[in-house]
Length: 433
Image (cartoon, rainbow, N blue to C red):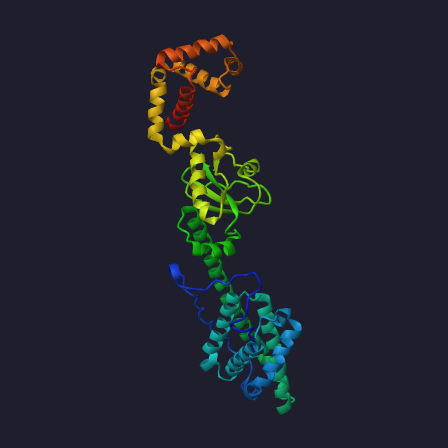
């Protein structure tokens, strides 16, 4: 009574991967639920006997009915006209399903579980192939209608008047149909959930492997198929951190339109692999919207999936340069700060060497000198521009610079010592708790 769909070897829709169901990581194929208690028929014994006699005739007619049902399925349901379906296998499975279910009308107790198992298998197979569930259920309704009409026709030939009494078993037959349609749908949805979990889990594993550097060259074709990231593309990585709640993963930043982006989240930090195309990382930063309370680090552009792990480490380094909340730090613009945070012991030693006497001053004096030195460097070594930033006269700036030289024994006329001072100020800012 219940037609099945296409071949078990049917090809899925183009572009749709069909993950294999497996027991990895504790996942097991779904189990068929227990049968519902049978509904007792209200028909009298004579009507039930007539139904059984008609069904026995149909058992001999299963091949012919299979031909008719397959033809109707192809006529009324477009999914069955797909060239990916094996016509022989479609017919064979329709035949097997009909044989199981028509026999169950005659011997319900003996054949019920085999009929239910057949319906369950159909649902699981079709879900694994990506065959549409609505098309599958439509096929069941087509087959059930054909079999019910054939039952009435067969009974009428034997007993024209008695055939009218089959209306009393119609509810039993259609309850049977409903149970099997529900089985098919349940099996389909259970497998679909498992396949979805499998795809999502595999997706996360591939992204994590690219970011942590454990991906092998042989994994790149799968990564390209699953993630849509070409093996030889140009990439940057964004590292995103929630500054308000480091124990939870931040809400992903919004990346510019048109950029293929794959996110991977973990506690406190999220990473995005971004396919840049012909643009550089600067274009990515301009279109990056960092959520309030979060900050981001952006790597330089790298070539190929094999370099994504390097980009991730560089993005993490950019993030450690401590951009302001809601802002993104591009590593290409922060190499001095990146050098400091990459070797904090050396950074701390340099800060002590260049700023030790200043850091020993009282708080107000210390902050005044540190602020002046930073403004002077930001102003390109110009006392006038530093004065404008600090709202004071250039001579005041010069006096403070001379005081720094007297305290430390350094000379700000020497480019090397200016470079070391710049790094020392960055180290003090980035490494001070």
